[in-house]
Length: 332
Image 1 (cartoon, rainbow, N blue to C red):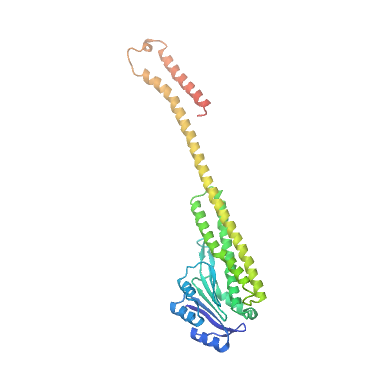
Image 2 (tube, rainbow, N blue to C red):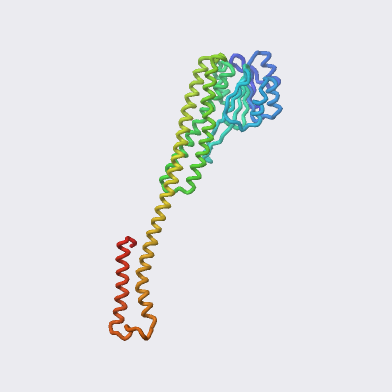
């Protein structure tokens, strides 16, 4: 169902589980409570109902419906609109899978619109409901918890990418590099996409902290946001290091491939030299033998006692001379 979870909270405690959005809006007004509505790939009508009730900006609603947005944080009056790009690591395919989450945060409501299974918002809701004091801090506390979950879910992704890089490094110097350049390039693209998802979080959290005093954010919540910011900085540093390692790996691989090709070419040249040298050595005796095998009557050596030994000596001498010459030139 598009509506994954839908509840009304008062002082950090869940008081109602409305069966539809109309009941949610009614309970909010009757109890002066806070609504937390979780939508999963909702229809346009459902988003329109939420947008009408909470006066959401049309541009933000359009982004939530269209999807495929970059990570960002925007403010429309008293409503914050955040786009997050969570990620998961697929062990089977050894690849990073990206999701998309849209979060509307108002004075008395939070609406989440997911386009993928990640992040696990049920876990976020369960953790918050176990801490009514934190949940009682309002919608900003829910936004913090969502950001914290998204950043935490980057940890296994970082571990998976790091393992892939280790495998690439082992293969790089192991000699079995069939398709290695394609794997390095594919992983580099994933790392770049991951960096595009995590890098904006730094600025987003900085802006949230800068506006804390203006919008009366609890001091403890500010400390929690700073803790998430520290994690984001570390994640971005790791990803930047991954990009550098992969760039170097691609350069080293290209160098090794060129070196192997050069070594192979040099080895082939040496073999050609040896073959050519031996062919030349054999050519001398063959030439002499060919001339003496023409059987002309007017050849002076035909009637000479030492003609046959001279021909054999000439063959041997030519071979020896050519062997010495090629040996000095290091062809043999």
